Amino acid sequence: TKNQDLKGKNIIITAGPTLEKIDPVRYLTNRSSGKMGYAIAGEAVKRGANVTLVSGPTKLNPPQNLKKFIQIESAQEMYEAVVRNLEENQVIIKSAAVADYKPKDYSDKKIKKSDDDLVIRLDRNKDIAYEIGKLKENRILVGFAAETNDLIENAKGKIKRKNLDFIVANDLTQEGAGFGVDTNIIKTIDAQGNITEYPKMKKEEVANVILDKIKVLLDK
Ligand code: PMT
Image 1: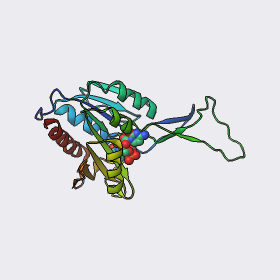
Image 2: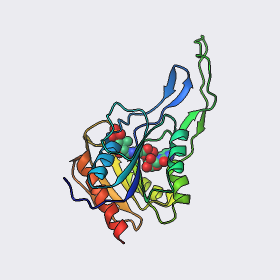
Image 3: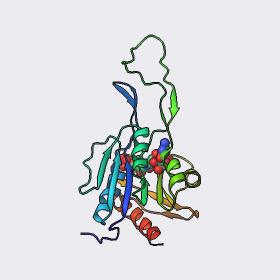
Image 4: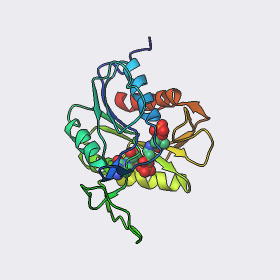
């Protein structure tokens, strides 16, 4: 068993993709498998934390001994689950890949094909991290950034805008990083702009790097 350095700490983690319905049989989603967020949840449990995992649809089995496992589909449902559980949690880790847009009009009947082009208008979803950033008080808020270009600049922008304590940036152009795979290649960037680079690691090891940084912040 691991050292119980997070014993008694209440941590909420979001994982996986969100699913935005178009009609009863179709939806928009993304390539997140949930592996990164589930790895953080599993390692946090091993270190003694009380973990609430809010998950979009994945093929994974949830880690054992979670405090709560909340399954959602849409970004709106993820937002509501996080807000409902914010009070009791001191740490929020946003590893989910949340859809930025949803279909503006859900069709409760299956959309029929015709000879014309089909236009689906999209509406902005709430930015969950941004909303939590406004409500966080002395809680620790950790975000992720998944980028294909201008990783550092984009990540720094997100720290400020979303009021994060630090961000975990994965470079989607590198093999063995980001969506779907069992490994990740990350850089962490804190609110002061300090950047730390890590080699390719298993997502469980990445999880422990993140939890180590959180432990330092909790001890301050
Ligand atoms: O699930 P895996 O297959 O293991 O893949 C892991 C991962 C690549 C999905 C993960 O490591 C990751 O990078 N997750 C965040 C992906 C993402 O949505 O990045 P972003 O740059 O679009 O968003 C930045 C941050 O804001 C994220 O913490 C995100 O959760 C949050 N966000 C974004 C949009 C939105 N509407 N609400 C949010 O809270």
